[in-house]
Image 1 (cartoon, rainbow, N blue to C red):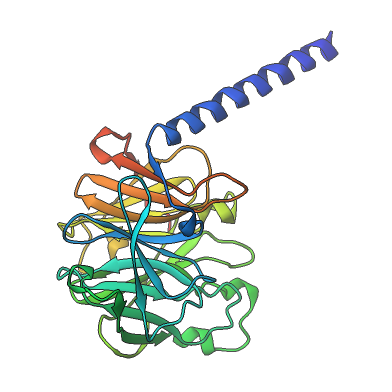
Image 2 (image 1 turned 180 degrees about the vertical axis):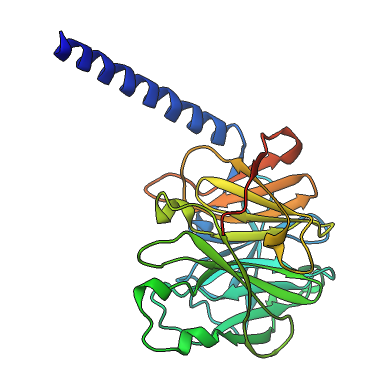
Amino acid sequence: MLKKSFVFLSIISVLVTGVIASYLIYYLYQHKFVTLDPQLREVSGIEFDKRGRLWAINDGGDGPYLYQVDEQGQVQQRIEVTNAKNIDWEDMTQNEFGHFFLGDFGNNEHNRRWLTIYKIENPIDIKSGEAFAEIIKFTYKELWEEPLTPDRKNFDLEAFVEYKHKLYLFTKNRTQPFDGKTNLYRIGNHADNYEAEFIGSFKTCTTAEKLCWVTSAAMSPDRTTLALLDSTDLWLFKNWQGDNFFSGEVQKVNLGIVTQKEAVTFYDNNTVVIADEEFKGIGRNIYIFKLDEQKLEPMEQTE
């Protein structure tokens, strides 16, 4: 009898798991807008220019290119940043004037001591298919402190925003044991060499590092909402004090099934656009989420 009960409960568990998985798949894909051009198989950053045109960059391995994408997901034009290299481009943001910032700061192995951000003019003003970038360099004081033990490896980076003439960096945590925290740093937004200033930390989760990694960030056009992206959730921050985005209110949006979500931006103050990389034939899509249609889950600070 006990054996039959165990088998029955196991079957129920499998069925429930299948229903949940099916729902999560449906939830994500009902927000799918378009599949991206194969040239953007490893999309890592997206941003809309002041005319509402979508631009995208690829992860390391591609050239120093910025791609303009139409509503069918097809590449319409390409801009080459002529004085740049794509070692590990990981995110893209812009300031109030529409200047784009391209973050070449991926640091998986923690062997890069100086990281680079390329600042280019508003893509609307680029007519030749080429851009010459202003170069911003930065490092972390703590990164030079030896030994860099596994519990200190929180200097990889895939997310940043521009806010009030500064750049704000959100680390991708690779600590062992994994503590789930993204660290917030601040640097200038114009050409110079900077030592990043630590501001604060926020813990997303500790269930599994690949689910909790912060992979992109975005600031709403009205500069009142910060979005952080991971593989399963969108984190929204509002009503912060000064420039510590983690000091205010926090809400979370469940994005459905796990995919390799790598890029987020705002189209307007209520519309968030997300892109994922292609992995084993899954992904390379653009998804659109209207925030006023989502279940926003209030979160407690977990620092």
